Length: 170
Image (cartoon, rainbow, N blue to C red; front, side, top):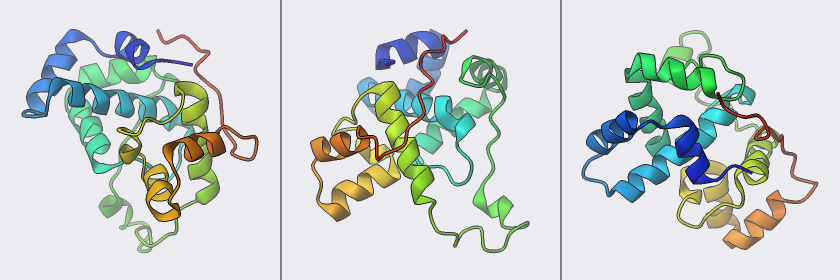
């Protein structure tokens, strides 16, 4: 399992931390750290994710800011799982090729696997961070689950997950 501190140490240099603190001002530094860490978790799993992104606009915003620093973003991508450049494409652009792109239903099996992978690789969801993962937040709100129930369910064999944190970044 990879901790939040290990994520920051492996993927976030001091210059990018400074940059994010400036871009996300007036958020407290701890909130900026949380968003960066959740973005890094998503990006580290993104090589396995096809389709719409499973994270909130706040995490997508961090991704957008990282992309703006093209050299830093290319360097980050080389260190992430898969070691390849992660492209970003909006649904508005994709709509040119597929008029129904915005109305396609969610891929529940894929999204559950992503959440299961999160728990397997980064530990249980935290009450303060679950809001950044769309399906996880939905399950808490609509199903009335507690955070413990969600984590317990995601940790069972019925919730598929992919382990990849054994690979050392670098």
